[in-house]
Image (cartoon, rainbow, N blue to C red; front, side, top):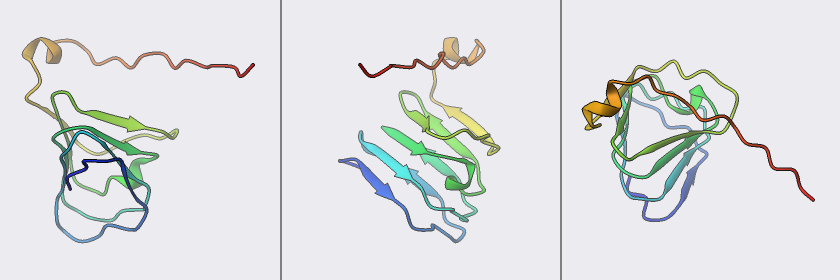
Length: 104
């Protein structure tokens, strides 16, 4: 799926096919997806609220891509980081501390 603009899919994706996200914009998956193939992000951002949005297969993130998790969840899909510089893979992955902004 090529996302030249931000795109949201709320329906269920099912079957045994793979899902490949290309394009610089954000693809948001919000359905309880049951597809059994892999999810690959070749460019841009994939946004999910929870593990059920990703289907059952592996999750593949290319260098420079973003997985945005908007909910409180555990992602249990196998994760592969592809084409990342070796220096990035030699260190533990760390998530930055969340920031909270208070409205005035």
